[in-house]
Length: 418
Image (cartoon, rainbow, N blue to C red; front, side, top):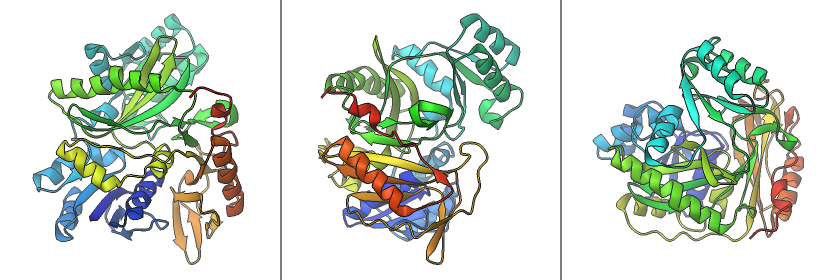
């Protein structure tokens, strides 16, 4: 098949590699210089030009990676032009585009999530925080590249975060409204499902590491690494999350007249009362995709087309574990340097894969262009073996001026739950 992947980061690189593995011809717009794809010099928001390219080149299926083009209505536009595309409509993508939209839907349809209130006025938000106390969670309502969330352990930190969003406009229009939630305790996991209306096809679960530094310390980031499977989350819990969260959410969206097609990502917390929703995304997670897709043995393009047709889908998984570690520029998620020399970024191990997130090629070497620069994913018979290979491959890159967490996947080593 001829396939088009929209996006440029590590998640899209992983999608491209998965499609290429099955022998398809893959185009990426705009893609990145590390991808095994034909790069198309079009930006993610150029709906008209992207659709024209897909039509001209007889693309069989377009897959949308990032959230911004989804909220920009790319799926609606492609469908109007009679083109096959995998992703939610602009309306359904509001599951990620507005925290309040998602929370209101969950409240109405009895989907378990943290208690919350929404604010646009700083003084009212401050009074609420002081009344509720800490720990408490402050979220920008709109898109903030994974950084618009503060898990505040003190009232002072929570008030400061609310002030930054509502008064100082740290996240621009994304933070003119904030959602303040109760703090949930427990084990976190990411559950992505392929969805078409009320039909839900679960993928393997993963666990992301949001905080910048070891031991889940430091500021929230877009994700510093992930691993899959997650042994401390039992298959019974995964099934409970599917039956009580993912499937009811898909049904609720259909009931509300905004049926969802695409990847519905649930960030979940296993609390004492069972799994609860922390957040929903409307696309493949980043960096979870970089550890889930390397474990998928089925042909991804065929699977996505079957989902779009509403067919039954059987997914075939590699039993091995995958661990992915993100290399980020020093200072990320705050101020960081660009243009760091990275060398050739070639890996010798066949068990390790390198996915480019923020790089560009200059001659024989790569330079950094973003905060999250690249990630390395390794497969192994155990999480411990995969960790060893991933960190060994990172050492091999000898990339200076970058940092990573050294504890990705360590939580899984303490568990014996199957």
